Image 1 (spheres, rainbow, N blue to C red):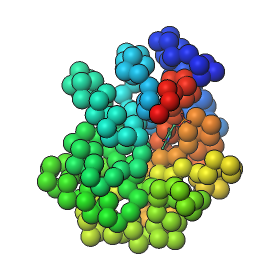
Image 2 (tube, rainbow, N blue to C red):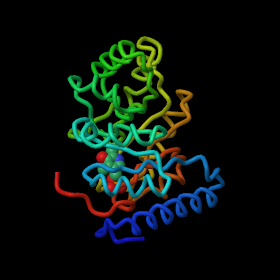
Image 3 (spheres, rainbow, N blue to C red):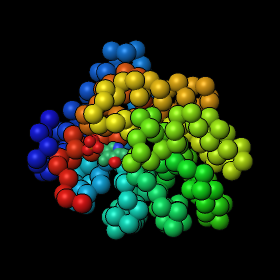
Image 4 (cartoon, protein in one colour):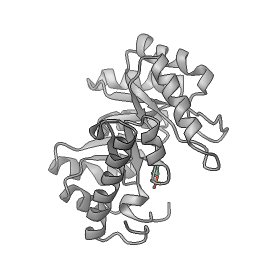
Length: 231
Ligand SMILES: *Cc1c(COP(=O)(O)O)cnc(C)c1O
């Protein structure tokens, strides 16, 4: 696998094979189905040429964290590859909700009641009831998005029953300075008691631990595409 400094086409293809292999190996080790884990390639702040390399290699599931950047990169790619699945994995401002509903296929970052209400309204208006994840701030970090664990059950119920959102799972980003395993385990517990089967968790540094703890989607950027450009 590349050390994260090169974005050449050959490296990107090799990185996809290596990361996919590690996901499958980890799934086998923990007696999970290798196909149960979806690799979301995080292409934020990567050039379109890097995305093209991944598409040429057959990959179709991607994640972006900013609506505006995604609007610049993806409409053309989506018109050429109609089976792309684009996930929003970054915080969403309510004034971008309409644009997000128009462009993305999955929204992973529903983190507060106001956003949930506006997204539900925009989805109805657009006739697009997108699958969504609820983001849980498992570490209760003040600067991080996400509903607190103790508020998650009520919020999940509100999103599903009052707003009619198609909630398919939970997403989290553990605190960088902590062991991720307890956060992944907590997310799994909250999902299980709410009858949710999908867990979006794990990034370049910890996706194998996430697979061990039941991730059904891992969000990997740097390990696939190399170092990102500055924001
Ligand atoms: C950037 C980002 C990732 C990917 O991070 P890497 O460390 O580059 O794999 C995953 N999830 C979210 C929410 C991100 O913003």
